[in-house]
Amino acid sequence: MTLFRTVAELRSYIDQARKDGKKTGFVPTMGALHAGHLSLISQSQAENDITVLSIFVNPTQFNESTDFSNYPRTEVQDLKLIDGLNVQAVFLPTTQEMYGAGNKNLLDFSLNGLDTVMEGSYRAGHFDGVITIVDKFLTIIQPDAAYFGLKDYQQLAIVRYLAEKRHPSVRIVACPIIREVDGLAMSSRNVLLTSEERVKAVLISKVLFGIRDTWKNRSFEDIVNEARAAFLHSDFELEYLEISDAYTLHPLSDYSNKAAVVCVAARIGKVRLIDNCELPA
Ligand code: AMP
Image (tube, rainbow, N blue to C red; front, side, top):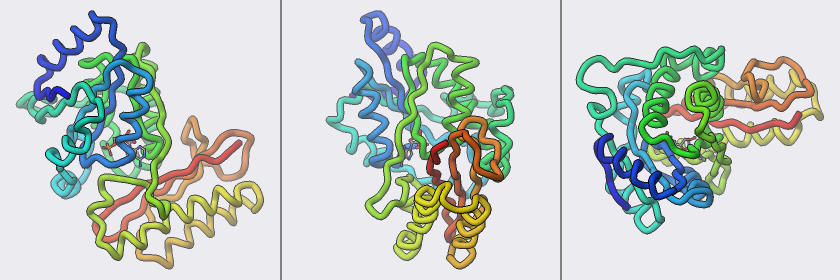
């Protein structure tokens, strides 16, 4: 496992790997690694000769400065966790390395409305930051494939669109959501929950699985209303619970013959959690 802190060093390593005919998989993360991240790594290892993991808490995708400053940073622990996992390259750049010293210029690229719903309407500018950093990474690394979790469903849809238009040679691979035993989706932010909040956090996945299990057996309206109501009698503050077309992310107001997804964002105490569940056509 080699650590790289500069673009130039990483690039020269990757150029050599490409000359040697190695297939490269790329796994971008913000660190505080957990089993969800490790599943992306194993998927990349199964399909490539080398895996490049990035750990970078990208400032431009945070719309709240406290969220950015509170975000867990556990570099030493992260490196221990992946030691021996056959990750060939770990990229740990500074903000200066990724953005330079001046203004953090954002990529100006239209996302065809994928960024205006859900996370886009609650986290102004978030996806501008996401596409800026993903575009930079894909340009630097030019991997054969890049691995993203379905946990961030809207992000994945946006990254797919970005890659299709700007990096068509990169295959974007969607990886399933890894959950704790009680159903809570693994997330770096889970460590910020108090032990009481952690117990209560199971509500999100319970509501999502409730929708999945009764999907098309009850009226669409009842399903949505009851799911939203479950949060009213809880310690969560629900930001949105939306059932959307799985591809366009347009909100649905009734059953259709298209694949759908239910996405939730909710706050408990100081922590904002997101989760989702795919729903069949
Ligand atoms: P993050 O470090 O939170 O930016 O996440 C890095 C990548 O890991 C993203 O593609 C996430 O969607 C993915 N990821 C995060 N949590 C999970 C999870 N519980 N299961 C699968 N993938 C995940």
